[in-house]
Amino acid sequence: MERLANKWDEIAVSLCVAVGQINDFGLSAQTLSASRILIPVAYYLYHRQADRSFRDEPKNACDRGTIKSSVLRSLISLGFWPRRTAQGHP
Image (tube, rainbow, N blue to C red; front, side, top):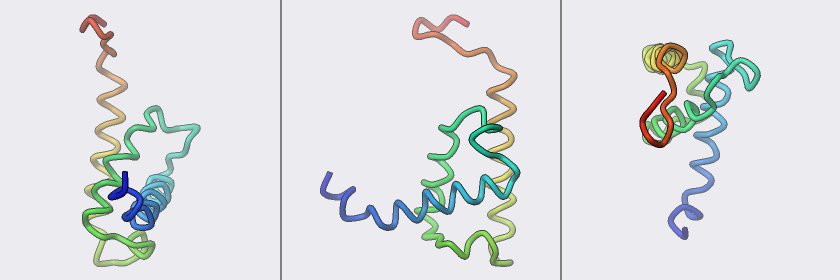
């Protein structure tokens, strides 16, 4: 827990950038069918040490495109594949 507390400022920035980036894609809490998609995006941004400028800097355009593609593929996959119960049945 101490390690998490020590890194919290950087983690919070990554979460905020992830939320903003997903919003830039036209998704919101009302249109996002799986909020768990936010965590991998924030994790990626954290390890890239992305700050708030990530969303606008031209040098990050390729990364933003990759994130967008991954998010949209994840949403499509969630929409087409049946959810499984704990026993593995749809």
